[in-house]
Image 1: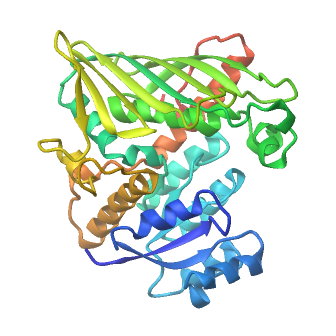
Image 2: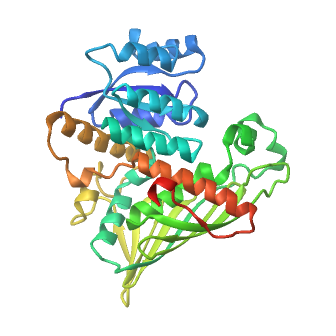
Length: 384
């Protein structure tokens, strides 16, 4: 596969997410880091970009990057948007409309209406708009999805998903600017913890089961009372294939570190996976003994085989999961350039439609939480 050109907006020096994207995009030598507008401070962005080897394609702002790149014959093939949430819509929209493929960090937008516009633009232009639900890149998550699809646990009855941590549990830290903005409606929107972490768990439920959330009821609470937005939520949901869902997300669960996990229970078996222990998938067939499936072992699914990078018994982590998303996108972009169908096992990257569904769920959770947990339609209007 010919190396593609990759650019990044945001993710500058000191960023939490920037290094994971740079590692993931370059791991398979499918993308060359070519251009970037890495900081909201123009000169700092240029200086840091040059230190990473971008030369004159280190830009002071995303508008400068768009203006220059769209004129080049060797323009970037994929742009990753890793900026503050409130800027995702404007940047993603601009690059899509100018012929670029985009990978946007979640949440894709701040409103449902913006999300629907991005979906329409992606469909009209034919450009890829992917959303970085990066945890779906883990090999055993892909295998879990394949097992459900081929009927290994029968019809899915129940999904239980969690994303709970305790890193915002200290009330004395509530005024820390790095924490405070997350619970400020002016900066975070209508939801804090669910929009930050809960949508990862909900998307994972849909990804693994192949079912979409249709309605939900939520109990939301601010356990630290100076917060306007929730720091804990319990969400019940129903899916279009008949599955029942339970989801807990929290930022005040002291002792929990990352806390993303999923359990899927079917008519003939159950599956369990945790992001903190990603190399094991627990499988319990009805009436048999518990089995532990190890990443990298023989006779797994094509979806798992293509996303396994190191030998069994050696850890694979988040940057490698991100790399699998980038590998999927490289395959998709190259297939389009060559006018061919892409490998079905690679056609699993999260799309703009997933980002839109997440934003609709965010608004439904916020509204349900205000109304004592009433059931609400969780679908965006264009999918009803």
